[in-house]
Image 1 (cartoon, helix red, strand yellow):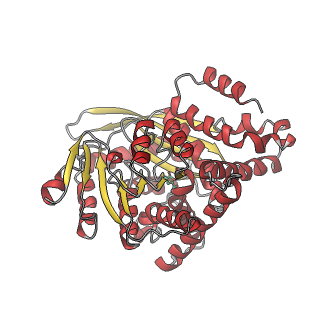
Image 2 (cartoon, rainbow, N blue to C red):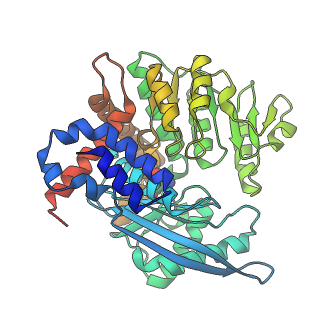
Image 3 (cartoon, rainbow, N blue to C red):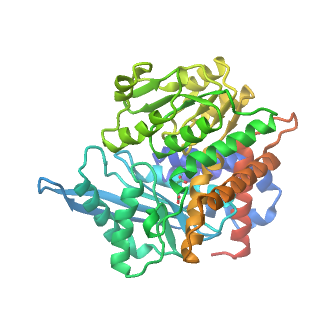
Length: 445
Ligand code: 2IT
């Protein structure tokens, strides 16, 4: 495999798609050696096929706002790869959404879903619609209009969307409601649904819980535990909430959360009702964390800054892609951070990852750490298919087992000769091998 020629040709075909090219480059570098040991991959042009989505659907989403004004947004669904199972991945509603971001997310999702061991292919979708400041009625009308443009491409054995940034239980409910009305069938087809209409217990918590189970395994590998450690979390959405809950339950102290307006440092620990308050902050729809410091005077708000400047034992980026850059990573390392686990997708820039790996800081990528979310979506699909609902204990037990298994795969494929575990390499190789073998088994299609 000639990495440079694949990247050059992708750059020529998709100029300016920087997040997508960044995600592809990371995987190519990590799997190069393994790939070259398999002449059948080269012969079947597996890599050239894997880096292009199977299909991209784009559509205009037209809706009417509360003032009666007509609004237009763009909707997308990137069906990246279904070698392992139906397309599966979240929907993102955010002003920054573009094709490059959804292609990077769909590409990552393909390997992440492979790591879960469940039969799910990779996809991602979304819109440049910003939920910020929108009324409940506007959000419902937008979700319905979005599904009018997409429903023909979905189905329980074809493509099963879920939530992501800007899409939570409420939005999934509105999209699923419209989808069900159009197809007149109660097949699951969305995950992250409400508990009363086919949703799974633990799904809201699953991304954060799964991440902390993964962190526990990473620490156990170093004969360490999480109790008593200080943790910096970024973001204040669903993922940050689940991570804060589980970290606190396991005896760690969460000292930061953040929003687009800056970050909160609470040296007394963000626990108990303070974690519930994150949900309230999110529900206001204003996308700011500053009010936390007014409500809890022991905390300080740092406007326009990121939490990575605080001295902590563990850093958990839980907000969005590239939220930890080279400089942030250098600060974390200089302050003696012991472990960095990306809970957001591609939360670290390549410079940040280089800094962690060069300093032998224990670091793991989002596609391994945050796979508990989509894994629990897979469990929701199983429950829907058998028309049953499992107990919270049952779902949590399976989630725990899946995260332990992903950790084992990373260690198997990522342990370097000096004993350092390169989780990025391990996750990429394990995910890649499963997708590649599935593609080989299904012929040239
Ligand atoms: O990035 C992700 O894995 C998600 N947003 C969840 C996807 C899913 O289908 O549950």
